[in-house]
Amino acid sequence: MKGKNLYVGNLSHSVTSDELGELFADYGDVEKVTIIEGKGFGFVEMSSRSEADRARQALNGSELQERTLRVDEAHPPRSRQRRGYRRY
Image 1 (spheres, rainbow, N blue to C red):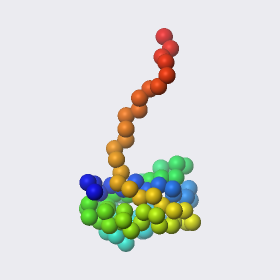
Image 2 (cartoon, one colour; image 1 turned 180 degrees about the vertical axis):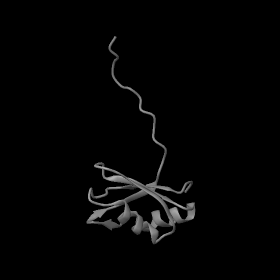
Image 3 (tube, helix red, strand yellow; image 1 turned 90 degrees about the vertical axis):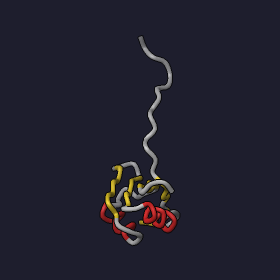
Image 4 (tube, rainbow, N blue to C red; image 1 turned 120 degrees about the vertical axis):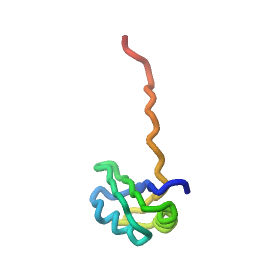
C-alpha cells in the first residue's frame, strides 16, 4: 500500500465522523476523518502507511450500523472529461 489515506464506502447516512474515527482508532492514530454528506462514503487519514494498511485489512468487509464497509486505499480524484457535444 502506498499511502495513508483510506476510502471508506457503503456508509450509513447516519454515521458521524466521530463514530468512524473511533472505529479506525483501534488500528492507529487517526489524523483526519471526512464524510461526504448524502453520498455514503468518506475518507480516513491515518498517521502512517502501516497503520492504514492494518486498518484496511481489518475493517474491509466488517459491519458498521448493519452495513458492510468497503475500505481501500484512497486515490486522487480523476479529472472529469466532458462527454457529448458542445453547443455553439
